[in-house]
Image (cartoon, rainbow, N blue to C red; front, side, top):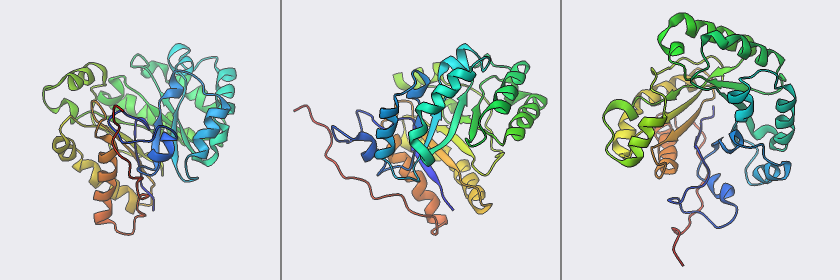
Length: 276
């Protein structure tokens, strides 16, 4: 029985962290991270080896495929680029929990053939998780069923980005307004397709509102764990300043009801950053 929690990044100006080995410090607070930087550029093998060296073997990286593959080529004619990317992240070894295929909002149900072909040709020794943003997948039951069928054939998971709490009321800060402009506004999804479900949850600036909004997720994770699944939950806020503490708080909340759940590591205690 394992629950992994994490954030969208492993460093943030508001988090107390050392000047070096920031990932090592982060890994003492959380046991998973979204690897968003790989969306913009394929990392060097030496950088990936450094990530592996700073994290324990059971740490989970959810590595986003490059935008060239998902957004520019839309999963078509990308075999060479995909191989190069997989070679680059090979040093992660078992820490590479799954490959995150985040698709653009324009990727519609009519494009499912490209996703099916990509997953069919993808190496089977990797796990895959797909995030869609087109409203039809959430509003049209037939489109959702067709996507689940494509994912089911490949043993892939559907990653929901839960923005319900964010959009529950009007924004009250610049960060919330910016999130309102950029984040997808889609229906909440709670169905797991595999033994490794994943949810990306974004709250608000208010810690209280963020925690109040995730109660459904607490219940859902408890159900998944008792079913023998191993979920990964990523906690976001509009500016992510409190995300690190919120991720640990979420894990602690689950452990109060499932004491047998392994605890997170003891976090490295650091002084807050100073100007001098």
